[in-house]
Length: 337
Image (tube, rainbow, N blue to C red; front, side):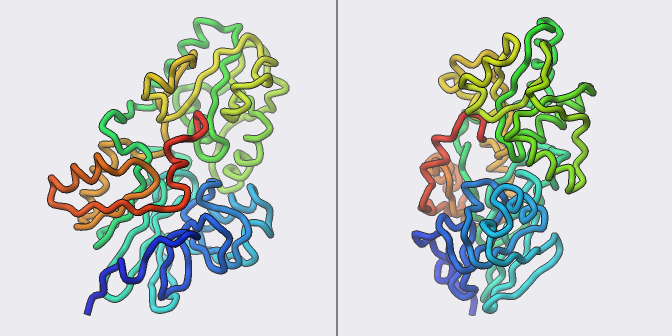
């Protein structure tokens, strides 16, 4: 007899716990067994005993955290592979968020649950695209789960940077972006737009870019930001772009690449706001939920009320899955989403 997923998958203070399998998904605290969706710091925390993840996520975790802090032991699970733990079949499907990002597919007692982690639906050559998986319960993020969030084509956002650089060639153009995923995506967008010159990196971005290249992602010529001349394109973390470090650049035009730039209040004071996100927007969330054909949607990491309301209109059951750290999704560092 099929057992409802709420009887074997539930939120605990440590994170989302699969009881028969004895593991947590993206736990907020160190645990014995963790399945990690991707290598961002709010999902891949240090100190776990055993870590299961996509091989690229493990590589990025080791680059971020070091070999031992990334988990005492590591187990790689590629696309199309599966293991059984405590009677639970675990497999991974691409999430399209950053390199190695995965949806965790759990099959147990006649039911399938997909825990999406973070995901996006816009194309991104630096990571595998999202693949919808039919399921009984879909656990979705809700970082941008409001109708105001409808993201433009990122190519148009990058075109504005290059147009500004052409108009003001003596000013450094500094793009604030998160070091893992967003940085590499912005580089790929610049290359696709025809920028074949060097791109200068803050030292915080250098390790992640080197890891991406080791994983087969070609990023072109990258140079330390300390060598940036006037008129260069420089990528830096949001914190560095907003402090004294940026003043060392030549009369910088500061751009911020984030989905939060869609909000006028968040973009106020930013000379070049770029609406570029590594998360699904409102339409992307609804499209994805429809493609899973799941009758029940569990919602985490963001505002859930509007999404639950629309799902009810479509005959679907929405449930707010309260997790430790969910409030962080509404107050990120600028450029982190």
